[in-house]
Amino acid sequence: MNATLQSLEASRLKLLPKAEVHLHLEGCFEAATIAQWAKSEGVALPRPQEDLFKFSGLADFLDFLDLACGLASTTERLVELSYGLSQRLADNGTGYADVIFNPTHWHAWHGRMGALLDAMDAGFKAAEQDGLPSVGLCVSLLRTQSADEATELVDALHTMRHPRVMALSVDGNEATAGRTGPRFADAFRRAGNVGLRRTVHAGESSGPEGVWDAVNLLGADRIDHGVRAIEDAALVSMLADRQIPLGICPTSNLVLRVYPSIQEHPIEKLRAAGVRVSVNTDDPALLGASLVGEYALCRHTFGWTDEVTKSVAQTSINASFANADVKAQLLKSLKDW
Ligand code: ADE
Ligand code: ZN
View 1 (spheres, rainbow, N blue to C red):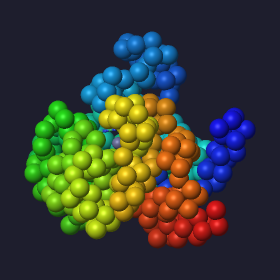
View 2: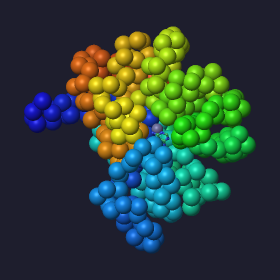
View 3: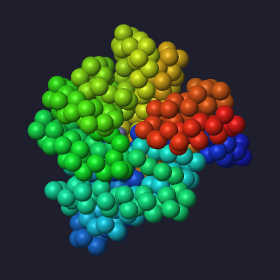
């Protein structure tokens, strides 16, 4: 596709009404911001700024999150980040996003969960007041945490009842943590009982067994990634029958080496098998992804027509934890795209 056609395609995809359901606040740092904050804190960067986002895989990437989030030590810095995330949504024509944040990475805020949530909330509120899209938060456990830490988090969220918080999530590296579904089952059950939605990273650093556990043990309303479900035909059928949506991030899976090429990525096979799929950016700044770019990539690689594109956008809206008004508004405008 030549440059003019590419830019026309991007403009059309920006206008596509859609939600994003798999996006980490931890993945929204610009390299220049990290470099500037590190300098002012006297913290050494692991690599020169131009190579800062060159990761060897998920483990290396997750270590980097600790460094970057550790620098966000003040309310002003968190407001800058969360406002910047909302700006990124608007730049891609995204109408609403469920944003994952994992308290374990934000070292300066340990033991101050309420203050941390309020600081993020201040940035999102300011953005909404400026007409930028609305955001809900999914507070995430790390796969390596203990069962007690997990239930403590759920109890704290229940006590706070912060209006920005929609869901409990779990992310991190299942390859190093091993099978942890049973360990988190109680926390996820409690979360469901107190009205939190549930979203689970699985089938990225785990195989199909992680996705089975996400559904059977953690009661996932939605799976983040879930792509390796493709290795188990019975699992694909179950996901399709139960209409459990997958929040898929093609570029992330390439950069973090889950698949060697986009041609080998299973999103289209899953979609064609009747699984509800949406496309997302995961960690857009760190992994060099944009939501418009993810749609364009899938259309180009898999020949998605406008009809298919609309059905994926529809899944993104329906699978989101947005309120009924936001969903209805987005679905209405999607009809006219
Ligand atoms: N945290 C941020 N991005 C992640 C990913 N792709 N997998 C697991 N945990 C994450
Ligand atoms: Zn993720």
